[in-house]
Image (cartoon, rainbow, N blue to C red; front, side, top):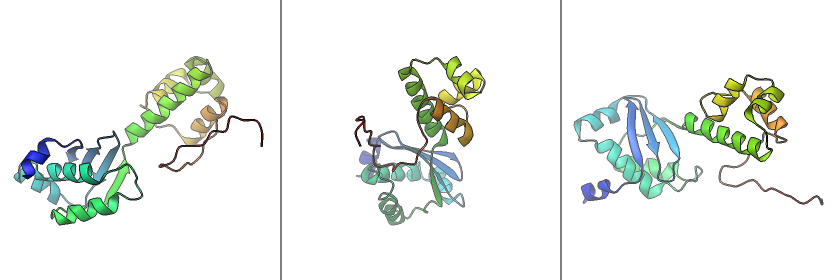
Length: 172
């Protein structure tokens, strides 16, 4: 029975407002999903949280962390449940800022550098560096590049579904 399955969902779904939903998957990935009208919100309000319960079940069933393959099955299942499909999806910016900030802290500590020293070498206020490291500040690419350079790193685009390969050997 549907209601028995719903109680055990691992994915958390909530409306932020009538046009946006926040989805937190069982592995901690957070997505914001947007709509062009408030039909799903009305369904949610009138039918005992039917929409969020269905979306939780759908994500529990199909979400595997691979953004290249999940959206098709999720949308198909939403159609099957007669839910209005979303118009856009994006990763939660706050979580991504926190991930980057945590990485900066880890690299800084590995280099036995305190925050004040890093801020000075980068040329920013230590308070701003603190906000960047805590994920409370959206840093521009120029400052992020300076931070990476001081930490002897470079900014790069890597596939989401693959870990970067680190070659520690000095041979070519």
